[in-house]
Image (cartoon, rainbow, N blue to C red; front, side):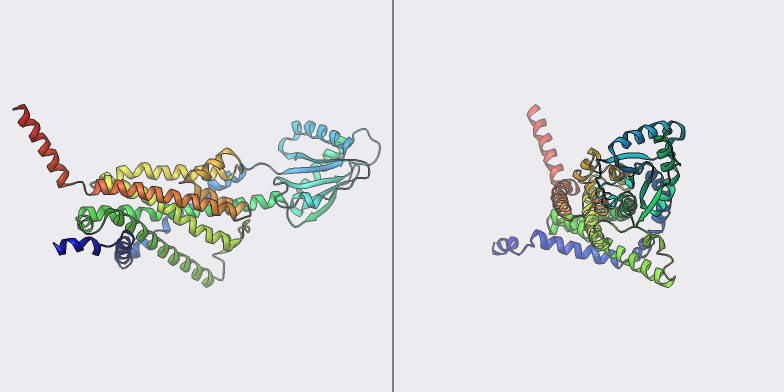
Length: 420
């Protein structure tokens, strides 16, 4: 009796048992021969990334067109707007869209560089000041050179009938504008989202395959007889997360060494990405955290699916909807990225499975870390709920065996006796 009484005291706690399972699975996967072939997996997502580049070009084309900010005397603003409407019918998109920044009074000054500060007017690519007889166009060098002709036509059409020579547009170049920075940061956000999605899609399937293999050879029953099923669930989930980080570290180191060996030519595309709003170090740190959150969420779903399946064929059938939902979540987050502040972005930030993708894109486009602290807290709460719910289903389904069947048999036997 003393031996029986001491067994619960010697039993491992939930976290300790989960750590044992995690260490066992981590070492078993990491030192297996198949892990080498697993490291070759990114070759296929690279092909997908190349195809996604074409979709990205279409996405960039759907971004709102840059606008020409206008800060002119009040009497000239209306004339310019009328000329813009008239020329748009003839020239279409060649005529820039106007955004009235201010109607100036007599002797009132306006600083166009302040309007081009990133974050002030996100879609303003250049600012028109001065007068219609002597317009001054301020913006990035490439943008104002492109708009020199259309702005000259607008000014000439606005002062039609006024005697004097045609207006000459004066150019004032700046380093950047809000519109150019926004477009560049959106490119960085798109690249970060795509990388996070590819890594999650590639690595989350390991959880499912590991569980199905151990269900087939009855190892899972031996583990469940020794430790709680919740610990088995948590251990497998975090073990595969650790293996994923090892794979990412290997791929990242290989890419870095290859870039150094080629003199930096291989990293030209990455180096050409504009600096994100929060900076590269913070974006990389948030990327690691958001990957962990996305992996744990989808991994808990895959483990729950694995507990429902008895064969590999059933796993493939049941996991297909979850895989398709991952694609839907990714497209939702990509669309929300182009609608900052809209309902789509708000929903993508709140919905747990799309929140890591949406928040990583927001990190590239908006400064400030406070919103990410709240988002990570919300995602961690959702991870806890999903892990708890998944472990309950895991415990009920994986070990659904003898005792329940005996109880059913006894129940039917009693019913038959009563009828007799």
